[in-house]
Length: 202
Image (cartoon, rainbow, N blue to C red; front, side, top):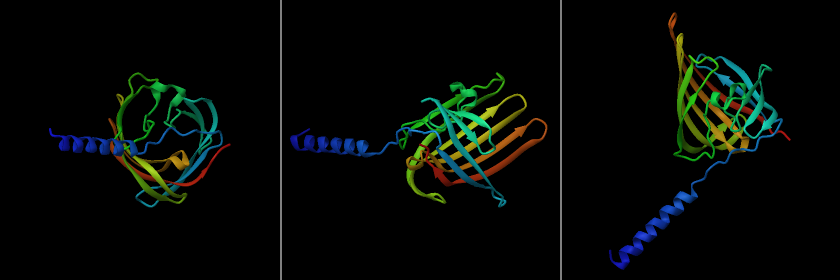
């Protein structure tokens, strides 16, 4: 390789390094007690409902106590992944920080019933603009799927979730679920949720 070629090669490598370094990544949000998300959910048949999540306690950086829309309390991990009973091995890892386009991971959930398990995978596929009733945001689009099985049924779920740093969590979600049971066959549902209001805690 002559000197000119070497110079060009070095310049190309430097440019690629700059591009890689310029790609943004979202660090895990700092959650506060009182952070609340309110959503409107719709289905293809035109039905609409609402749901919400509100952080009411932060026992540690890896556990959040969250009030559901129906008033029930449950646990999420430090990335707002559903984590029943506060057990990390029960968590459904739909978000893994830092979020960066191209990152992918798999997860395996355990349950109190040893005959039940869930295997899934997720990938950050884009950083894009999103408009929802709560406003316009730059969000990381995460596509995920998981299969939950036990002796009585099998459930396949496919998510698309938009994680938006400005609201610390998701601003939109689509979810398709197909359940197959031994007795009643298959049933499929589809729903879309959009953020209507985010109230930051203190």
